[in-house]
Length: 203
Image (cartoon, rainbow, N blue to C red; front, top):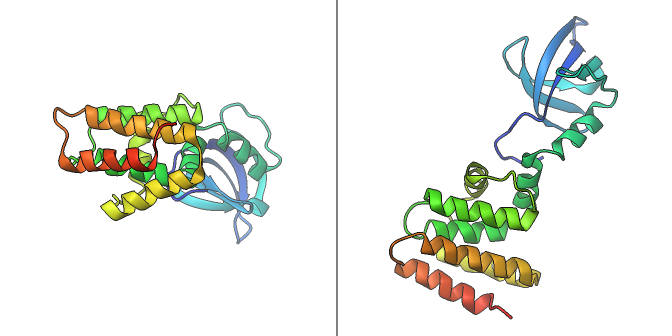
């Protein structure tokens, strides 16, 4: 699981046995999990709690009543159906493309709504997940610190080294579109576009 902001993966109803042996029923809006435990908002205590699977005596989907026998497997199946999963895959597999987009978007001082719309469009093309919106794009970009010029060039080099012409072409087009959302092109933006054309030329 990533360290990005959490969203609810599933809401479960569990009977949970505490260390002292007390058995309680509670709802849990799960936001994170691994092979041994899950974390989420405990509706009984009204705060975030972590629950070990081996202390859960029964579990069901809070909305449908479906009995959950393997909690980790169940959460993984639900997680893979969420836009959060798509964003986590992007975060893990395309950090350099995201850094390039962030550098170009912030080249004029701030990331504006029209620029986020372009970024969201690029991410949709890359993933074929059309649930991605401007809010998702902002969340993903701001998982990274804004790169320096050197960091931008390193990221471009890594994208080039991956040798995926389709992704490279889409990235260059997205960066051009980001710059074109402004009334004028700054020197920093032009330098970035020139470097992209040099390192990621169209065939």
